[in-house]
Length: 191
Image (cartoon, rainbow, N blue to C red):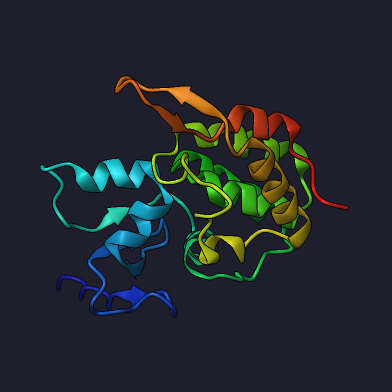
């Protein structure tokens, strides 16, 4: 007699029947998430989900469900519950790096007051298509709620100081750009 297939187990907060992507953790827990959420926060998911050959089939994510839950919560919630477990936070950082979630890395670094990691995340923002043109005026409230106040104010100070940096464009015109390399080097949390 063949064993009966086990019932699909869904993560408590990720069961929305209208969500279009199904992620599966290493321990076979399913997470139903919206396409736009992954594309907004991760350049890796953005590229993967934009491919014309991509089929909306379950996507395996090689981490335990508790780590994937924290990863998705950090993308989805304005005030995610942070783990006090340093090894889990390290795994979350590695997951953010693997999926190229720069804003999440900055926010996580702020929660642990890791200025060095925050600086690295800011420097790498220049390659983040979604956020590289970020300015004080265009900073989304959803993103502004995530970092600690000291880190947010430090970033705002740097964005304000960089405002007005001009770069020559190919259209005989000047465009305003955000110099993330400089912001990353000069960044310090407000005191």
